[in-house]
Length: 335
Image 1 (cartoon, rainbow, N blue to C red):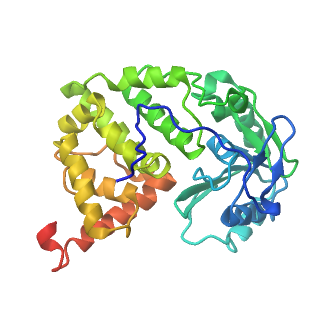
Image 2 (tube, rainbow, N blue to C red):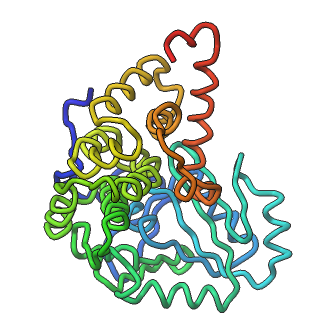
């Protein structure tokens, strides 16, 4: 158990910029003081996209997270492509193992961080950047962040960095969508070592103190399970446990999955003790809520489209391995 336990309902730690960095990983930017730091895998990713495009933007949480060294945010890159044949040829020589490609998007997990590359035509690239700069199209100020790694320049139209905290911009009206945004916000804040803003903390606390009715339990539980792997990867299991214990999530998973908060947390600890660190926390959580405890049909909210989520894909694959491992003669009595 970690002694300095974080809570899903408590403000995170302070933003850290600087530290001991490799010279290659310093990317000064003009509009906001600070540096961006990238690990070796991320530098390889940037080198890779530069082989077929000179117009690249890192966006959203991947910019916010890389304001400090050893970020867990991963990279989300938008790449303008004028020659898709050249991009496809480059993909054949991609330096990543076990990546997932669908249409013009490529994603993979490395050392717990999820990375996404979107290859876009010039028109689509321009539209995406324009959408990011609009307050009406984002939930957090950092969603509008973009960074040009070639010009070494950041664009921060909603003052996400200068705010010095996670800044909530819009609030979804429906509870399932709101829960998804709350989980993502906490995950982004933890990965960036950024405190959650007061408005966000109050809104999140109000959201999760309500209980789900039997009719509402299903979509709320679905939203929780969809966001669970990324939340576990970015925020950590202490925050997952804290979230599971809230009235909203505990009542939703009880109604939709037949699983109490105490049972979910206890089962996570039991499975983690059996396997040690062989599998990610996200994988163990998915095994707990899906592998054994689903009581109802999950069609409509657990589907193939989730494989496009880089954290979900890794966690679901590993959760399947946990299920298989429990079928062995040695572990079957503990399943």
